[in-house]
Image 1 (cartoon, rainbow, N blue to C red):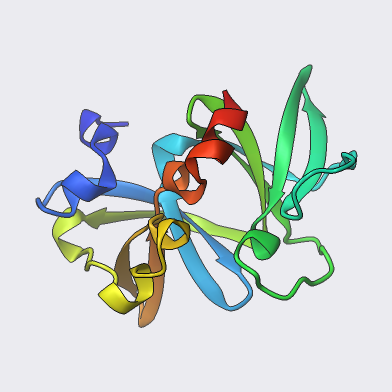
Image 2: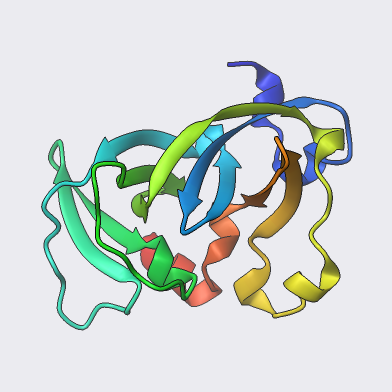
Length: 164
């Protein structure tokens, strides 16, 4: 992987550097996260439920001796839930220095794009406060819009502290 991929998406969008995104599906929408945030992609294991956890926390798993919290992306984004199927995956990502799993409907591909191709999200969409700050851009990908996220911004300050 090139050192260019280490540049944050916000900075890259202002230039013409090449960035790599892992794209995944939730409902009928496609999202992308910086490839360097992704540690691995796994099939759905058995998830242990945790009492009194926030609604979007599905539970925890044991991944090679490490306990990893699992977040339901559908619940986090208030999207109607559906049954897991053979395409459902957990993307293990580095969030504020801690590994966290995110349940997604499917993982599509690794996309390589130039930063100049990323358009800023409409201000109406991100004016919702902290909860929408994680949307860093939009990319027109094969006549579909890919919503680019910064996973570290998806959580409030209090939630981020719970990761450390």
